[in-house]
Length: 262
Image (tube, helix red, strand yellow):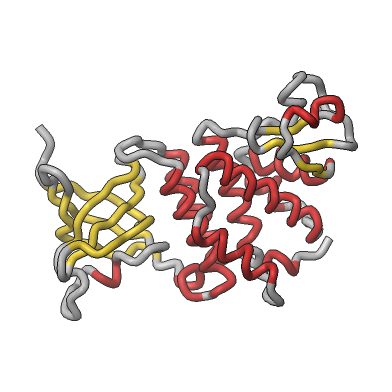
């Protein structure tokens, strides 16, 4: 029989109002996967829980098991990721990470590799010079760990090795197409060999090898297009923070990642 109280690390992915003073939370944990729980009275000025239950914050939560939803009884901040929560250049990438994780996971399914990836990514977005690089790597690795690994070593249609030119990417088929098979998906679009190489590096477990690459803006934009189309294909709807990023990119604003030089 489970103990009524349990303790876990958690990152808040999403929250919304519950009654007059409470909030329902969706959190991600290392050993329990994604969970929904209630934080009662958290909207009151006197609440001691509120500041520790912000999105993009790593906290330790003590919760009481309930018939339908568990209830938060105690919470303490472990890592605040202050820059990721306050610097506009970083907030967008942080929100993209937690929104996409929420969309691609089911409640109650433990995935320690995803937990480790989440925490490492929030640390990188918080501290590294280029938060775009960390967020892009997260998305590709999330696809891999969720069963949506893009095929970039061969043509997904004829299964032949790729040539160095005239490569297309199919979001529907989940990978690259050779010149002879590019018509297999009308949504397929041309990508460079350098973008395919970067995507292949991002799919590997080694962040160090991926991060050593100096990414020209043009290749960065290609990877953004691959990730954007893949998100739409997998989730049927773009995440909110990614839509905001696309709007900003079309304006005079350019996030940190867009200033990266070859």
